[in-house]
Length: 514
Image (cartoon, rainbow, N blue to C red; front, side, top):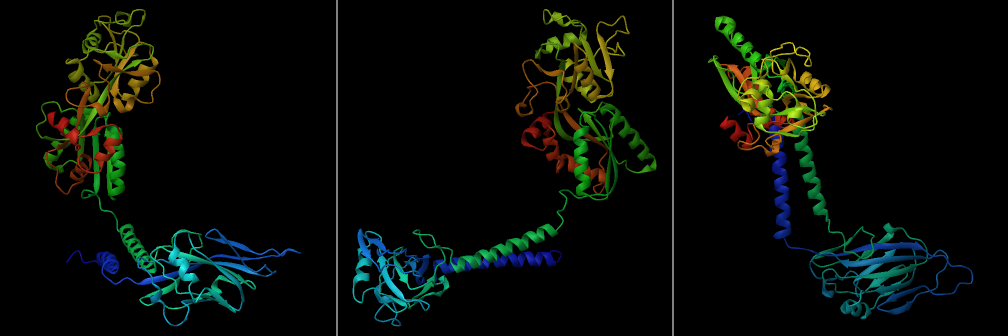
């Protein structure tokens, strides 16, 4: 079976181990008999220093009563012990074993002599205090403190302040005794009065096992090469067409070549119409025996008529914007005003903005531009006027109503509009940012904002289409890259580049409406 590999077996075994450990812990917590446990911990271990002529006693307080201890001698040590019930089951005086009869516990401090001992009990725990005072009472014998059989309910504790003849290491503090149905264990926390740590050895073991499981699985994941989202293919592919969409394709190309070793994507944008023609020429050559062309043409809007062999796929929704030189204080134009400007009926901005005496300069794209084709179809609903200027400032055609020039790139259009007072042009929305000296113009009060795009709305927008010569073979680089662009990770890149992917719910509706 194909799935039985060393990596899969390790991963499955690790996962099962984690499940079994978790189930075992649940069984222990829910169904196994709980054990009682008496815990103890050293909270203070400090030497005492008696100054010369000092005869005062060391004092402590219990329930508001001052209890005396022997005056400290140089070399004496105070040790504070906390004895606690750190499980959910109550401990009764009958639970103590017979090993330390008649007392319940025997606490020793190595070879140090116990000079005094005082018990402190939190206010309100009368039964604990009574057990400490009931015979046989709390006492001392040589190097040992003898503790009565004290009943402790869940969460209860008492403390012992012990004065020793000399210094003692924490490790030398020993508690002897036994507990029926339970155990006596040392706790390591030294903090004063909160509950004992609940991170039991079982919990620590479970944590270690599950951590190792996670590390093992992570190692397998890192070792495994993440498969591409859609099957990779090798070879060389040319992507041509839209210059407005070229920055997006450039990023998708980088990501695809990173995911799919052995693939080379050549980006050759010359405008939407030019790209369609290049694809058609490559397809015609393929029909003459040269094989299926490894070419994809991207177009701002649907292809022109006359290319029935081309097969289209929707990619994204792109927004475009009118841009105006900052010298003209206009932030909004109606569709009627825009059309009058481009028909040559408005030749000076003073006709729209009194006091602004600037000739209208139309900075346009060449005939191969998809951005221009979208502008004509979606905004003007007619072709732009003829080219009348080579330098975008002086009229070369004296019969023209308006000064209009054509440039071969979006960047040149934006640079020229920003430089010439009175200039107006258009570009894809993503390219407009970062060009000082110009500003976007709303159309009929609607601004080019991707997040607000829905229904009819803002008119200067278009669907980006990808065209191939017929249906490319399923195992070809053309088919693989097309799928990557329209359905795979390329859609994520499209979103980050300021376009609306057609694969998203909103994009699907707009792209479906055409």
